[in-house]
Image (cartoon, rainbow, N blue to C red; front, side, top):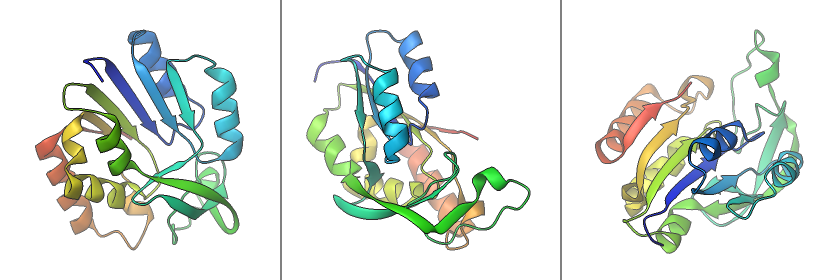
Length: 183
């Protein structure tokens, strides 16, 4: 690829950040990853444009199939063990309710698809999966392809993710990309 502006939205949901980026960067090539089948279908209908590609896949560390636990549209996840949030019922997860979704090794995809002369901006809102994904990107050097990362971190919602792991990954990513903590 040449020096085209690229936006990658992991956890595209209803496409608000895609729409905002496309409005400000009309020549950009945009990739949205949304494993929720209903949301992916809605995104494809909303962005019926060859410069916006929607993948009905979960950004992950391996290609394959994985359980995708559903709650409200804002709360689906690949990760087991999300804390209950009674004050925010819209973020509750039902671990009995899931669909099987395709996963993509995002690091491999980045390395196979892009070169260093592309300017990639990435938004990550993948409900706890960001830690394994970012660690894999660090381990494979795929992180070096992404100039700016907007990431919503969820360590406080998943007991298996320690504050130490959160701080270590956040620090390592910030050393190699322009990391913006998004909340």
